[in-house]
Length: 332
Ligand SMILES: Cc1cc2nc3c(=O)[nH]c(=O)nc-3n(C[C@H](O)[C@H](O)[C@H](O)COP(=O)(O)O)c2cc1C
Image 1 (spheres, rainbow, N blue to C red):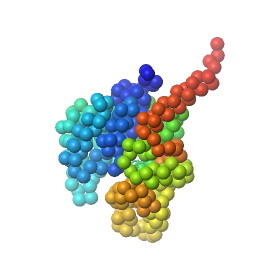
Image 2: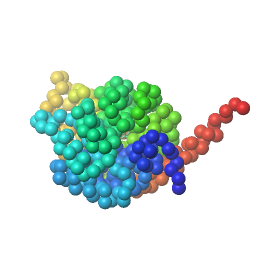
Image 3: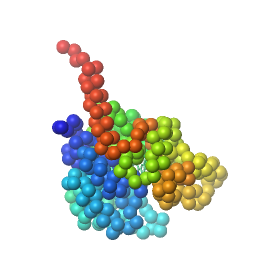
Image 4: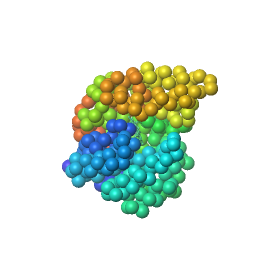
């Protein structure tokens, strides 16, 4: 079958559909990212999920084996570690030395890192919240493309979240580099809507969490399948680290802590440590953790192979295009 969509994003990555599977802490491992690649999309393995740099290198090699020659990338979170040590450059050394061609950066200002990556011939996608000054900054720093995150997104939608429909349209009008829209997107119809807004691709996280290739416990995926569009909430605004997560008992407890005056940041930190989330993915006991999840969870309606989800997205997108063409009646 010929590629149904051609945008600068499909060209940039050499993929069939303009859909990116963004980094997912603990979950975007070689098995998942290679399944994304084989399904004709591009996915990014989350560097921070690996215990150390040698494990990341081994993960890159494993993903390459499983991806059967299809493109894949690595997600690198730019952040200053609490002890002040440089955790980012060793990751960049590893991706360069392992011959990775595509990197997704997120988090703090990537200025110091984009140049290194570009000099090594790596294509850089930088991900920002849907606020124009960040979108423009990504372009000015030399990113090849920018992912714009709307308020509906799982993970970090930004300190002042802006809904995807505004964020995507505004971003597409303000930069020349291709824009990828994310946040609440989980259907082929939404892909077409994003393209209509001026984006050249979409990124999805939440929609793919129920794929069979995600290693997390089945009880977690079943909870997502049963979840509605109101089953997520924003938290950690008090720490200016806003996150959207599944409504769980653990999240309600953190929100209660945030209401105390003054906010006890040190008291909150142990509850939001990544290892708490990883344990819940392992056990399926979701009530005991803060688990990133977007409003688009409403579209995650079935546990099935990643390729089946992608097939459905493609079928939906084709139908949406067809329907729109039927609605358009240019005057003669
Ligand atoms: C479970 C989960 C874990 C995530 N972990 C990361 C991460 O480690 N690094 C990152 O850049 N983004 C992370 N994100 C954000 C996603 O990459 C993506 O931007 C977001 O999921 C898009 O919105 P959506 O969830 O509405 O599809 C995570 C999202 C989810 C749902």
